[in-house]
Image (tube, rainbow over all chains, first blue to last red; front, side, top):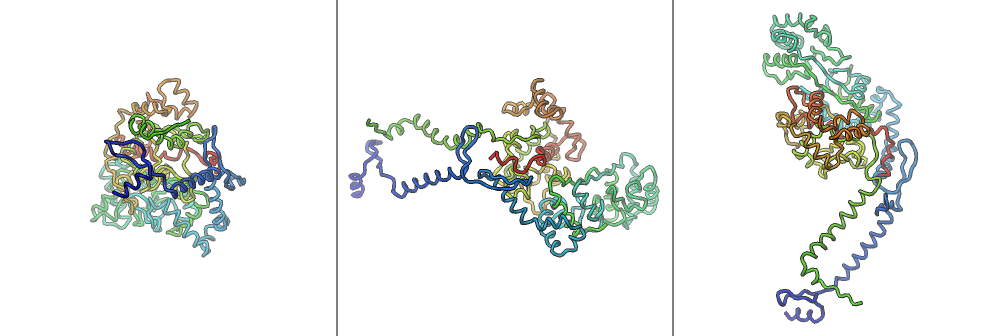
Length: 306
Length: 248
């Protein structure tokens, strides 16, 4: 109480009273606070001079600070400081750091890259990052794919070919799988026969009589399976028609089907409903040619072949 | 001159206090937002950006309804790592017809500003129905009802009319249509014509068959149509990589 009385003699109040006697001290601001405030004002003034700040007419004041970069046409430009110019300068640095490697990627053949231990290391690290960002959502982190949806890249079965050139082609232009729905043109027992024939070709248990009928149908003009899958049912890579004899399954989820009967059913369902999927996007516009080449070698190392 | 300011003037006059408080708190917004409407270079001048087709727009509605923006941004910042993962940084021009924009500020999932064309339609269907069947480590919820729910197309023209009111150039009259032909070309202008909205929506959905099911138009069709157009409108190969530096 005595302290309060003392203060009331030295500090003024704001002058008004509420509810009769409720008054408010008018203390000056602490010195440290006032000087910090002045310091922030000075900071703002300096900041405004260096960086883009105030709108002015139809533009703004760019500030004294600037960024120098080389653009995609090779022209060196200086622009007042902003994040987009800063990003380009940053990109220049990244390109310069990666140039020795990408130059080599450009000049070497696929086989040379694969055989060179140093380049191989680069492919493994750069390719892994590219694969994780762009390919893994469908083909999975290890390239193992998803049965029923996206092909396994680690096995020896390649729909469109597993050579460097074919993998490159697949990456650049993308792919689109297609098989007609045979339920529209064939009877149920014919499709059943075909399924048994395909099962027989893949070494699965099957009804021999049905498989024989399926064999005839497979090679007939009625079903005309051999047009795409080949007379030997080993597929045609030119059009992405899969090999039916190699026990590798993409569309019919045979491995997951339990029991001989349901394995044939899985095959039958695919023949009946056909396929209008198996779409791989084209990467030419999204990735640079060097990135695609790195990915080509990376994917080839996962399980490339013919 | 003896001007004696008194707190009491403001503190005893609630109306005056409200007005002064409002003025004080609008300063921040006014100095940061208002100038953008007068600065020439706020929106980059690029070719290709157009309003969404009726089907894409309905997909966008679903995107908002499901709260996709809570986990996915649509704003690629001009950083090296973002370029590597997502592609070219987002331009203001690319979201000029977005009401409301979906820039977002939270990335639990990846940025979607350029997801268009990156995955096949089939991947999107599978991933939306059961995300972990495609991306094992994903924490995204399942959205199975998108495939099962028929898309409501009855109010598509009303929705476009509402967007037209806030400045999206969907056309109602012949004159507006002609102006769109001039600005966007005939193919796009047709899609922006409100009287044909339902017809256009059905045509695009049937032609695209985004959900892989020809029996009808599902919400999945619309959402994937929208996702597949995100970030694909501007052809960046036509521009030098510093074409948009002057806009910031």
